[in-house]
Amino acid sequence: MLKDNLHKVQTQIAEALARRTEIKLTGDGATLVAVTKNHPVDVVLEALELGIANIGENRVQEAKEKRAVVPDRGSWHLIGHLQTNKAKQAVALFDLIESADSEHLLAALDKAAAQQGKVQDVLLQINIAREQQKTGFLPEDYTAILPLLDTYQNLRVRGLMVIAPLCENIEDTRPVFKEGYRCFCQLQAQRPGIELLSMGMTHDFTVAVEEGANIVRVGTALFGKRDYTKK
Image 1 (spheres, rainbow, N blue to C red):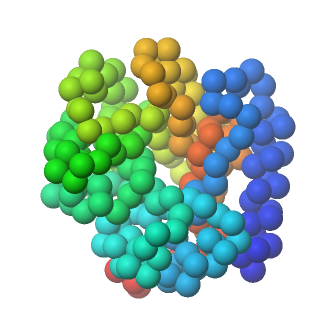
Image 2: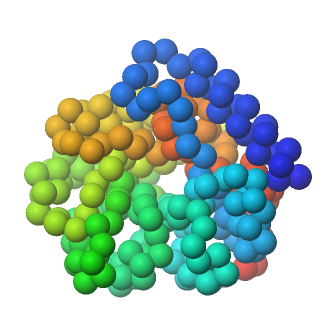
């Protein structure tokens, strides 16, 4: 099943890339992050065997358990909200933390990375749609944080992460992704090393790719429905 689903998702990404117009600054491709939240470690192993190099997890504890079985394979992305008291564990586990969503968390990650002798790659999460139930910098707070980024000696800001609202009509997500790309272009013009724009999940990743995403986070379309009885 996963092999067939992967082929379908990869085809959809390629078709969405072909539909792009005037999107240049995020490149010509889009990296697939396979979101294995609430799926067993066997799913991770199967994904890696099929050539999926990037694994996404929402929670530190679940990633810790899976990485104990798969310690040195794949590039691991944290895509869920991170509490500051778990910053140390997150730095130890993840190659890219996509959900850096507050000044307090950035400071905690910087401190943890310094203690571990690591430069931690992060994305700044922006709550463009201003959804109360979601975390992320509000647009005005995101702008205000930019002058402080150079004070974090052990963080490397690589770009932005955006989550669009869950819309019945996926076209309604397009303005959010357009604004995400605009913010990315603005940040890239201001800072070196800005190259990653993570936008789009199972229900809307094709629109996100059309609007400039070069990372998409896909779980259900690959692995089927999650078992939410697993905590």
